[in-house]
Length: 293
Ligand SMILES: O=P(O)(O)O[C@H]1O[C@H](CO)[C@@H](O)[C@H]1O
Image 1: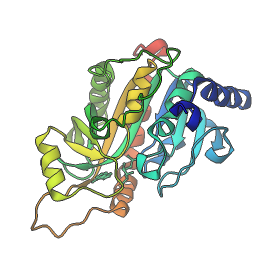
Image 2 (image 1 turned 30 degrees about the vertical axis):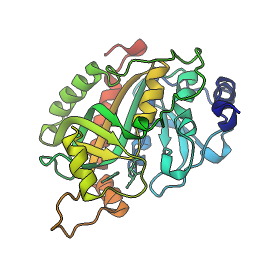
Image 3 (image 1 turned 90 degrees about the vertical axis):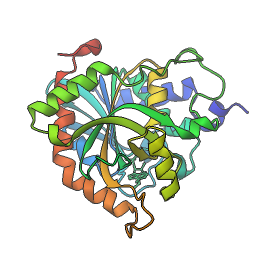
Image 4 (image 1 turned 45 degrees about the vertical axis):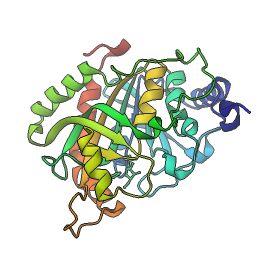
């Protein structure tokens, strides 16, 4: 059986889901947002909200992780129309990688042009502090090294080409815009630019793994985002992504510290306001057809 037909992620499945949503709401979103662990409050910046529980959306996966509410929220910010995933899906939840990235194809079919992804991540870079916000400039897709890439399987040209380029995955103009907005908001002291590394999870990294990832050039590590970015780029959407450094990884055998999800959610709460202001200000500067306002 073809992977796409077995997971409900074919073009027709995604189109059915898009048609259903478009029949339920008058909002025609141009910006798609994905909230990372503990960052679901980002959806609250949207006005005139219309929200759908994931369980009520045809073909849609369910959120199983604490800190991911499981709601798709449509609304506007200033005059920008948005759709926001309050909760994402991860490999470790047991979904095939095609299923966890299906919402990106749905975004495309809803008319989204720009995707803004956020995540919680562990800081590998020794200069990073908890609470830093990292503009993702590139990624290391470790599951992809082992063949677990969301584009594996028959390619549907209606979404994109068989061999999409990824050297331009993270839009450089949007990165610059984020730096400018961050500076205007007085965030420069905790705004970074770096490389995000995705692992399968759900176990946190060993000390040896952290040391290796840092040597490989990763600044932050998490269990999401890169798969979504690949699928979003495959179908031609512009991508911008932020990591909130919620914890410093343990890379010293003398350390007593232990990575844990509670700390991740706690840091999310502490930086929620700045994350929301940064993202919402960036959204106000994104024009139609991918132009910057
Ligand atoms: O990437 P998001 O969804 O923000 O979540 C991050 O936080 C969780 C670990 O605490 C993992 O799911 C990791 O990927």
